Length: 304
Image (cartoon, rainbow, N blue to C red; front, side):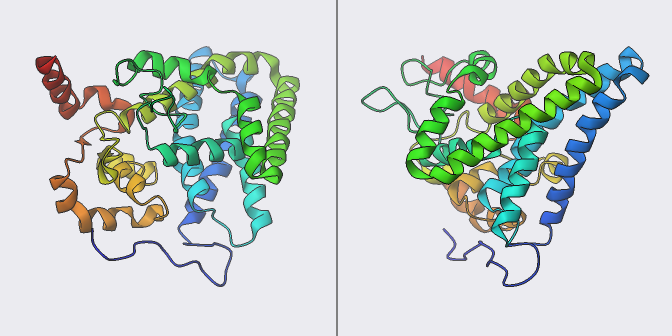
């Protein structure tokens, strides 16, 4: 690999810890939360088709935030002042509907295992691995992964595991869950019908995030670090999802700030090609449409 260190140095002054570009992510998080409040507050004034459009955008927004703002924040916390990072984590929890701190712990385990295959004990280090519930060393079926993952490994398991390593964060995660509960109780008071309609769309948003995660690793190589992830360089996707498409690069060097991933990709492109990094031409959530995925599936069937 190129000997260039693509990590940004931590700033010694100012509000942001790594890059002033993170203000875009912060504003996006506030915008997401404002959209949720607006959806509920204006629910009765909109026609049914208007609410349907808003609810679909709500689902997409959950996946967008989880895989964009929330994801980048947990790897490179935006602010130099630690209490501000905890405050932003609380805001993100309310916006996405679950504890950002608990998500951070699960996601960092994801990077410990990098979508690994089950070991001799039948378990994966990565709780999010597409191989965890698969058979015969193969990835789980996309439908099972997308629709079942939401119900696996609840907050109690996460809290217990996190408390062993980071007791304060485990308790802060509980504070975030309480804040989420209070927020939605307040929304019920404003318009209970709106919240009732949001429930299935919230689940669908989580499913969209799982779909994203599935194609971030399908046809990746769990045994080759540079090829742990699957990348896509679709420009609009990377622009709006904060370079989440550079997923092979991200897994190879997760401490690299999201703004530096394109430069890193250019520097290691030849090595990636030599090691067989899987690249798709669509956004991750549309990976089932990607030609390279269809070719890989056909090759696997021919060898079966």
